[in-house]
Length: 169
Image 1: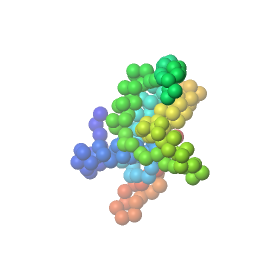
Image 2 (image 1 turned 90 degrees about the vertical axis):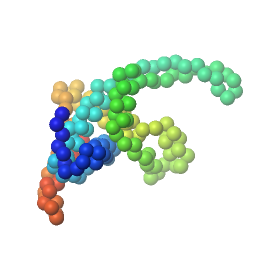
Image 3 (image 1 turned 30 degrees about the horizontal axis):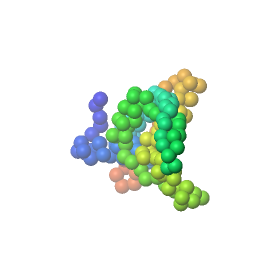
Image 4 (image 1 turned 120 degrees about the horizontal axis):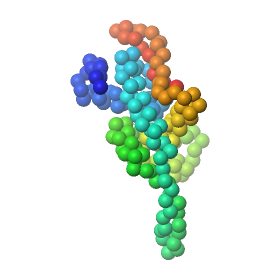
């Protein structure tokens, strides 16, 4: 796949794309130049499509453990199938981690408990919120792809670069 050079060395270009794809998935939209948006859109759609294919690929497993009192407890745990695990690891290798943000009305203890269960919040958001939404859209409309939208907002003051808003549809 031939990529645009974006006027940067390879390491800076890759870091720029990783950062913008991560922010697009985390916040839902970003403001950038047209050329960067086209590259980011391509990469983001690739990872979103990968998450859509694997979002429901899980299996329930029963585990028996001993609790603090020495009692044997049987738990039902949802595990990833090997293909979903591979997709998660591939996405985690590309996206940056974002810090979990405490809600305005959320107590500190509740936030700590919620934060303890989430190791990679961007990947979790991609698999739990974004992928099921687009999977449902694919089933209803019968069209895959087109997960991002580019809206032109005019030239940037200073260098007149074409600025756009890139957002998830």
